[in-house]
Image 1 (cartoon, one colour):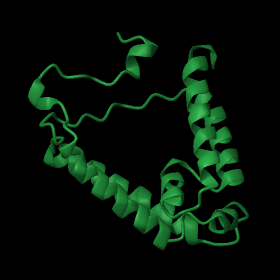
Image 2: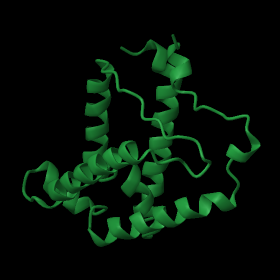
Image 3: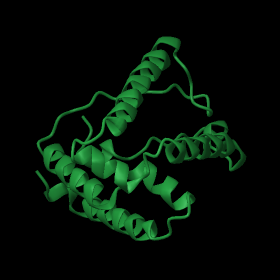
Length: 157
């Protein structure tokens, strides 16, 4: 049985062929830039769109999020069905999720931060890429929150 700290350590392969080179990351960078452009064009990085969502004034963000959930479900289904492998050749494993009460508190904190800043991790980078330099403050705060969570995780419910 794995300990809590082992669950979050990514598996590292000793196979030299399985290691990623800088060049092998180019497809990921291209996909990331494509998603950033889609985020900006779909206006989901707009602080005003996010405020509309939290005030229940517009369906726009719910439609985008619902489409993303359906796309994700279809993608996971296809990954499992077609037994797709990673670029390194390793099989893609999706671990079963275990509910922990702390996820409720974490979700609430995440939602409050999202409502205040108008950004969650994906759109955060798209906002910076679109030239909203003030979002760098949000990025630094998000990284500080992530570091704090990592440091305090063992003491949380």
